[in-house]
Amino acid sequence: MTLLVTGSAGFIGSCFVRQHFQIDNEPVVSLDALTYAGHLSTLGAAKDRPEHTFVHASIGDADVVRKVLAEHQPRAVLNFAAESHVDRSILGPEEFIQTNVVGTYRLLECVREYWSTLHGTAKTNFRFLHVSTDEVYGTLGPNDAPFAETNKYEPNSPYSASKAASDHLVRAWHHTYGLPVLTTNCSNNYGPYHFPEKLIPLIINNALRGKPLPVYGDGMQVRDWLFVEDHTRGIRTVLDKGTPGETYNIGGWNEMANIEVVKLVCTLLDELQPKADGHSYAQQIQFVTDRPGHDRRYAIDARKIERELGWRPQETFESGIRKTVQWFLQNQDWVELVMHRASPVR
Ligand code: NAD
Image 1 (cartoon, protein in one colour):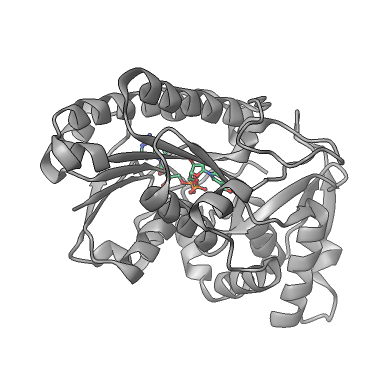
Image 2 (cartoon, protein in one colour):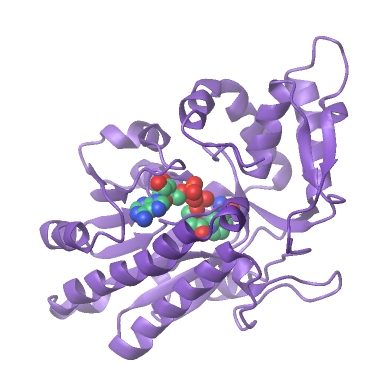
């Protein structure tokens, strides 16, 4: 038995692999193109496990993917690989189309070909799990009900449009070819190893470097936040118990405005690493011109995964954000290591 995990050197894929080896010895083949957002060090100790094999390749490289599938005969493929930063998708959508749409298509084709060679329970039990986002549903008004799996897709950014396209391909490969797929749509994640261009790690790292803490527009964009280890536990639950062809929303039941999140991070930093001059890090907050097409509110109705599969988040935002800030304070060497390859977007 083996799992193939794509995008394994990124924030969430690496968390899945690290968590997997805390509870299981099943081999993992992890495949990642190591873009600016992927780094082998993000896999931590999992990287050197005897049950772990790393393949440096793109999901769009059909020759390599075919070979990996034939050689390792995985019982499931989990697709975390993606271009994932909305700001970058606005500056240059091409990579997002290439990886999220064309890459997912090529991966699906290779997996379909491999799956068609399987027999008996190996074929019936095989799963392709596609990791997606709540951003495919568009934006909510202040009083709208949270996104359910039945909401229509209304993506507003090049990033969310490319993820929506990939979700549609995955759905079509199930309905047309019978591939046993599962799709998860999750809200904003946070936690250790979060690439430092995303809101929470950006705020922590800019604060520590005495830089401005940029907040878009009025800072009142609302997001639902989920600790990354809860997300990967949810993915594992869907892999083990989900019904092929179904989609599952995963969320933290924790809506917060961006400015509230930024202020909370500043308060934690004030407590854990006070500034020498006694001032609060919050004084570094700067409101900047809003992102074009910025969605106002996302919220997730995660009742289906709770009702049908028994998953609920274990971490509260208070405990998860404290762990996250502490992790970044203790792992600034990782931040330096991964940041030097990324061109800044803001
Ligand atoms: P990330 O940017 O941290 O990691 C993405 C990884 O994919 C990187 O290691 C990168 O090198 C790799 N990659 C990029 N292009 C590739 C390609 N063509 N072939 C192989 N590998 C490639 O992203 P993340 O935050 O870990 O997100 C993982 C998945 O979860 C994405 O599909 C994203 O859309 C989804 N998601 C993310 C969040 C979030 O809050 N971060 C929330 C919901 C869903």
